[in-house]
Every structure is written in structure tokens, then in C-alpha cells.
Length: 316
Image 1: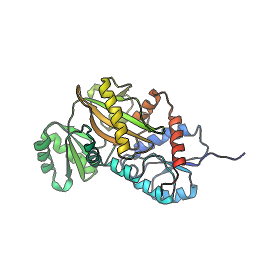
Image 2 (image 1 turned 180 degrees about the vertical axis):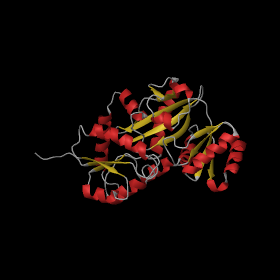
Image 3 (image 1 turned 45 degrees about the vertical axis):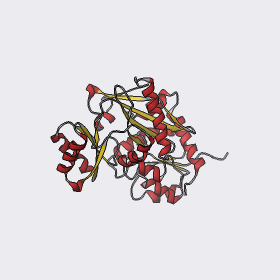
Image 4 (image 1 turned 60 degrees about the horizontal axis):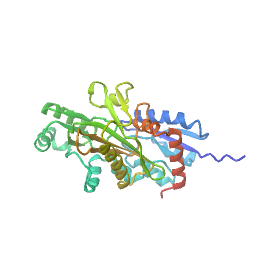
């Protein structure tokens, strides 16, 4: 009896500061996929990855990678060159989505509600960045690296001293840093899956213990945050988040999956923050909870993405 099961490689880790998160995601997904797929391999993203991929000759690659080299189009370009089908967005969509500032420039003409922001380079100096931020955006503000995920080096600042320290942390991660006006409201996220048309999953609210800042520790430490599904927000805001998550997914050319983040004020339109082209799938991640609340299973969702990649074939 012929074995028609595809050979699948999960890629994880790599040199990114989000490598640990990637490995957590990969570990969880590996456990699910092993129930259904017999030819499953897990590879670390390192300098030997091309040689290993050539040796294994997979039918599909799942680049379960977060941050630079994984979500920015780099690995996608390698897979395109090698002619290997893969899950997720292509080079251009991945690169654009990884750049928070560029993403906002692209979708602003669509009419989506955005927080005001300024972009600074490390060469301009921290004092200049702090003074310009206060003059143009006021306080409080949120400081975030331009092209990082997993809330790495993101912090809120309510005073000039906190602002200077926030810029220092962010510039330690990368040379381009974005200052964004602080919007008070609920932290909301909407996952989108291609089934086969892009479909928004139930809206999820993230709450932290003691109303703490939703930083790296709160995001990945069990018990420090909770997910409310469906998010307890007015119907108009709920639909706004779902509709715009899908519109941004389409506008940026994302494929298979994405997750859009919003801040929802007490009244008025939700404010778009960013979209993730490869959402986390750790035990504390949001997409798996939204999948379950929608009456689906992660194995079913992953199997659909594998089929999408197989049907799509090589992108070269």
C-alpha cells in the first residue's frame, strides 16, 4: 500500500531574539502533528538549514519562526529559491508586515483608525528622540522597535526619564525605533485563517494580572494574563476589529494565517496596532484559544494549512 503522506519540516529557533518563543510554538505544534503525520521533521534555523532541507526534500515546510530571519521574508526567500512549498505568507507580505511603521503607511489610506507615531534612528540620539516625541506626541507614549515581535523591548513611558530609558532599551535591539501615542483601552486581538477565504476568528481580549503592562513576561508566563473569549466589547467595535483584521490581511497579501492587534477605547473606533504574519502557538498564545472557541481544533487548522501549501506548490 503506497504511503501518500507528505514529508513535512517544522522550522524553529534561529538567531532572532524570539527564538525561544519559536521553539515553544514548534514544540506544541509538533506534538499535535505527530498524531496525524508520519514523516515529520523539526529543524533549527541555522547555517546548515539549506543543506538539511535538501537532504530531507520536504513536500511542505512550516516556518514556525518569529522575528527577524523568520517573519521578515528571509527564510521565505530561501524556500522560494529552493522551490519548496511552505505555510504562511510570501516574501513581500512577510517583509512588509514585520515593519510596523511601513505597515501603517500602507494601510493608512484605507481609512483604518491608527495611533499617531514617529520614527527615529539611533544615530539621531536619544535626547533628540525623546524631545521630539514629547513635542509631537506628548506623554504618555509607547516605544517599540520597528521590526520585532513578542513585545520585545516594548514599553510605555509617562515621564521624560521613562521615555529616555524606553528608547535605550529599544535601540539596544535595533537601530530604528517607533514612538506611538498611548491609547487607553482594552487590548484586543483577532486571528485570521484562510478557510479558504480569509475568515476572522472570535475576537479575544487580553487582560493582565493587576492591570500590568502586557510585556514579554506577562505574554509567555502562564497565569500572568488571561484571554477573554468572546471579548466583552460593544458589537460595533467587535465587528470593526474582525472586518479590519480581514481587510488588512488581504491588503498586505498575507496567506494562511495572521493576527491583528487593536486597542479598543471606551467609546469610538478601535485603534489598529499591528498585524503578525506568523502568530505564536505557545501554551499561552492567543490564536490557539481563538481556534478552540470557534469550534475548531488546531490539528484541523494545521492540516488545512498543509493542504493549502501543497495545492499552492512552489512560489517560484
